[in-house]
Length: 268
Image (cartoon, rainbow, N blue to C red):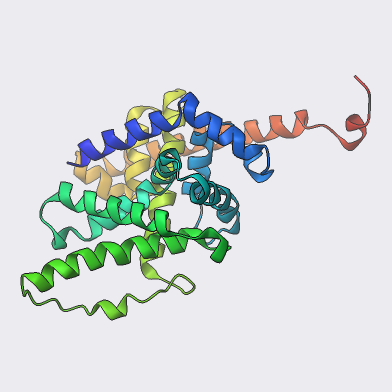
């Protein structure tokens, strides 16, 4: 089921990368300076999945998208937003597996709650903290759908729905979980790029995912795959050193090629 969902995510991201969606981004960039830093929707999605949900720059991305959607209800905006929020929705579905043994049904309910949230959101009435608002409202709608089901079947549920009051403006451990998932996905993507470029091997990639992304110790990882723990630690050090060296060289190249204030004023 996880594999099927991952394939769905990849198909959605490929769709959003197509020409018809690129035209939407170009249209927003005509009037929104912040979005001009993104060459594609893929770049935008990576940015939105990095960092934390309370980064105010994320409002600068979501605000024009949500305003455009409120104005024309073009379903392509919802596809873009679904791609952006996919890791957060995936986290909700996984965390609440006890609510519904049917993983496909549970996932569809999360997506439906998300789409309802996006369609009913009035961006003009809420100028900031869109990530928290969307995640919280999605979770509330998702919970309420199951709460109604539990009531109909007269099952006892320990949690009172009143406790899920609007907490978008406060600290929410659940949102912290979403933030962590965003960071993990961004780090996995970064390591994949290094693997594809040949700077680290596939074995190095899996080692770094297990120990640096998911927090296992080198000894734990070594035991799981049946190799020597000390050799595993050394292998991780070499892989990380290779990545650091490349990224440092890239940073130095960027500095050396950046135009100086004087060069900016000169003619060609």
